[in-house]
Length: 51
Image: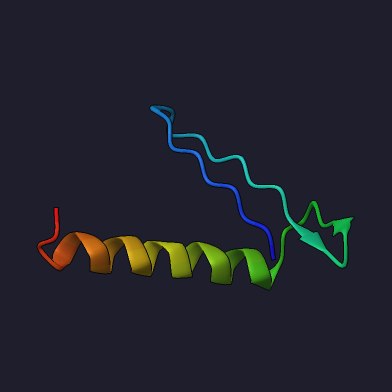
């Protein structure tokens, strides 16, 4: 799996998903799962008092 994240000031999301090296423009469950996982990790990090 390859992942690239970039934070910026815009509130727009740009997400490009692929399955088996083919683009999936309708995204799918893997995109929702990835988004939820990233959110959980960032929230846990912020709440741990490390910042």
